[in-house]
Image 1 (cartoon, rainbow, N blue to C red):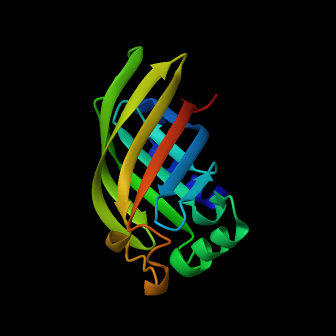
Image 2 (image 1 turned 30 degrees about the vertical axis):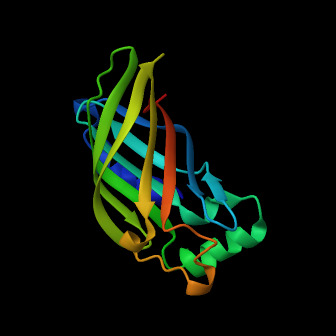
Length: 179
């Protein structure tokens, strides 16, 4: 985890004097899969992210093994059979945000960039809501991920247990870098 944060810091904090940098203070990434036999719900509070509000640059890294489930067997299958988290230990996003200014109040914003899951990178556009309040940046988004787009295979015997599309929710709170 520290290595990932260090790499993100090197990429985005090398010119600290030219932009307003924020790092994650708290994070919650969750996903939900509605399927005929059983709904699957998991969350992760270990995401690391950096946001440059002046340039609009954003990057975040999600450690796959940190997703927690209601049932330990689901978590085991998620890591071993579907996400292959030993081979692909993290998901990541790297891109740019438009529509955000450091004015009070909620604002619609869009992030465009590259989302990497399961070793596969796709260009994505994600809509969300951002807010600048009390010197912090709050970011919320919800979007759909198609498993086939990231070569995540579901055995045919389990097709009724897992949906082909997963709803992902992102909730990030950023504090000013250096606080």
